[in-house]
Length: 185
Length: 380
Image (cartoon, rainbow over the protein chains, first blue to last red):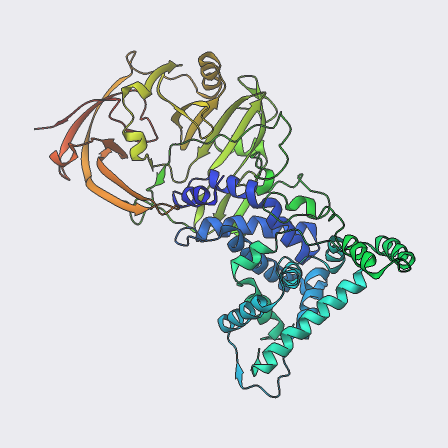
């Protein structure tokens, strides 16, 4: 079913829209949730919350890109659940991702300006646009979809250590770009 | 994690990156040649060095264009292959039977979802009785789960979850894809409880929907425009039911009816059933009832509101839709009926006493349709 048809059904408050949504995007959303949370039960909880969020948010929202919109909802939901469960240290996926993202952060001592969330997204878009396509896909697969380094290494056909090094280089590139522009986060 | 953790900020900013990059990342990654392959070509190249550098150069080009391997795709519907085994046993939203696009077809026995092209709108917000839509927010925290039998019992539906309906077994169902249950808090009580029960086997499918909340649903102009040809009557155990026949989204012929059991509004739709089988299903659900043999009801009520206007809006595809509404909202002995009067609703005004004569049960809960309305007359 086309996204526009699913959104139209949500706008009309037709319950089958949730089934349509889960049929088309269930596997996709579950993959992201699993990647981030590393816990099957939590991933399912995030998935259920995602359908509820979609039902509650559309309308008034009408996402231009349903796939990206749902993925972002999953990421936010997974993060919130991770935060709730953090003391139990159950979700190695997001712990690792956040530790890696710390590498991208510019040194805080010499900021010319602090980026707010939206400006940081714009800066990230500019930086992603400057990357070779293959590097950009790797970065988005690791830090948006939450694919593990091991899975990415397998997909590309290199050793995990090589992929880890590649991801480190990309994080350093982002850090240098932010620092060069005088930003902190 | 400390407060205002910059990692958190980076994570959330990443969530909102350009969707084009998110889409792009669904593409398979270019697989690099394996080390073994490289060694093989490297050794061969070393030997051929003696013959000529130009030829070596050509071989090297060959070595870098090995066929790419099978890469898991993140395309919607295909992502399941990218990770570990699926867990379809959990009773959550993903239990839908609709095959996802770009995924291998489901086993033949998997029933297709019943899609009723009758869009119903909610109009039962106690505080705003004239409202057309109830944009309620549902909180997952408020969801109370039930098993299928408990749900059937809750709605007063005399069926067994492990039994059959017209020979079909209960295969799936639930509330908004969350399993059977209802949204309820101590303060609000039950505020959403629309549950679906699907009975299916081998191309036959019955969908029973039950609700006590949002019982006054208003049909769309699509329904209103249905002529008498689309609306027929059947009599089962004293119930004179209105049947609608229309194609579902897959163009399968679908039959649909609604009825009220106590406080529960039920709808029953079926695909692939004979009329006799559909009647059998209704007979299992409906208790015997005394009613006029011809199914004609005459009652008196008060017009509460007259709707006579055109509503313009854009649907999800940004198509302009214009719907004209012509109906009376009439209080009949404490129950509000919506009486559809295309082109003539403005003859009446709020406060008018009217006598309604119609055939059959209200066609969609508490809605009396043009196809069943025999007369509406002002009293006095």
